[in-house]
Image (cartoon, rainbow, N blue to C red; front, top):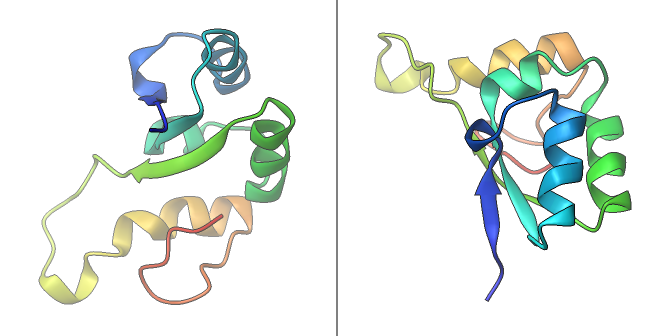
Length: 96
């Protein structure tokens, strides 16, 4: 069984959170949208950092859903996508 924790559960920068999560012996993270949006780097850099710490990104938590219809439920993904240069492989894909 893999153990992961949500980054929203800790305080500090995303890098500090990742280091604390790795030190605590977790296998992965559940990446909170605001942590990713405020991360000063690309999705590829985030992936490299997590892998260097022995972590995997298990989930993406876009908690800031705004009123939208079923056809635009991927809208929260557009914010980090444009800012971090992370084009999803296909609509709705969360793989990093």
